[in-house]
Image (tube, rainbow, N blue to C red; front, side, top):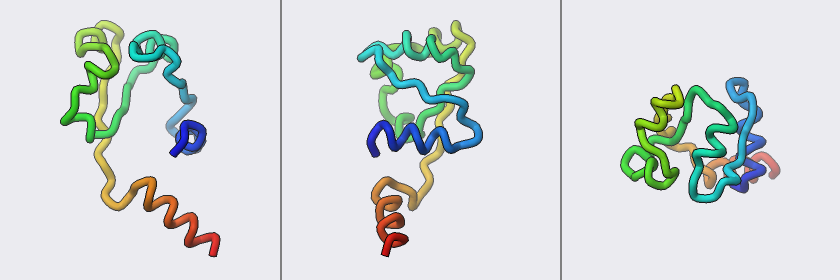
Length: 92
């Protein structure tokens, strides 16, 4: 999905008040601080990767800024490919 498609999907969720694009390049901390979130939610596929290194922050930085990092479980059967297939099926 493109950024615009992901943003639109997120904004249609009742629990999302706004979407903030990461315009800070590799160091995500300035963007995260500008949004001042209480929760950083990411897919649990990142639990097996070094998300902290990619985003250039540490658990200590998260705690110092009173945030919580939450891993959201992968939902089997839901993927961009599946969403596209369903949309195309509905158009027929």
